[in-house]
Length: 308
Image (cartoon, rainbow, N blue to C red; front, side, top):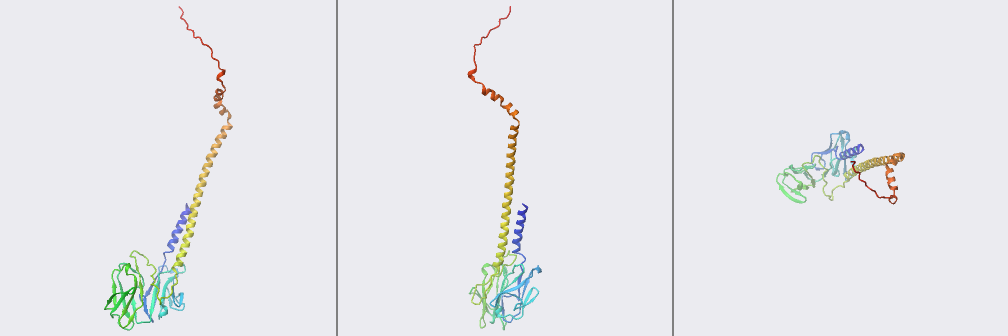
């Protein structure tokens, strides 16, 4: 029973280890699109600094390269990119020595003159979201048209649009257009449930001709967790089977003990023949009498007269 309890505890600990101690990747300035030449700072925020988080990315130039390896400059748990290039477009995340990773952020760097400033992290259901369409060289209050999944939503004279009380239906691919300046790249906006305590990985927009290849890291981590859980489950089942076998052996010992007691009683009877003979003597005597050997005679009954 104690072994089963220990296995159950290990099972719960392994479940928690797959979901806790995750860092949160933040981007400053908070945007998913940047002009070429902008300064960008990325930080891995986590309470447990001993986890040893490292910032990694996937781009068209390399897969799972870390900050300082040909790009960016490490600064504690942050990575600063002083001059960002279009080749820096890709997916960024934080990864620890133990294996867990943070949310993923898709950054787009354009050499054009228009970008869409949208939330880089998932937004919570019910919150308000503001989208800003801006140019590189002119004021950012020019009239702009905003699109979702290729369809026009509305035109705003001030260049920004607010979506009030966002819901799951507001998820999608957004872009903007400023007449005479051009169109911005597209960015995916993710809406999470209001009761979610930790943001899930940022959804990656549908692949396009300019989208960088993304190496799937999450399935690897999930596979490790599944293998650990399966091993613990096998140990748990094995412990239960062993406990049932032990209970069965205890029951067999009780039956053997009862049989031994019955045998001892029979042995006592065989060792005390006198008692057995006393109990069976009457039966032997009666069974030895034959009815045809019994003779019946005439019996005369005399009546005694009283004396005078």
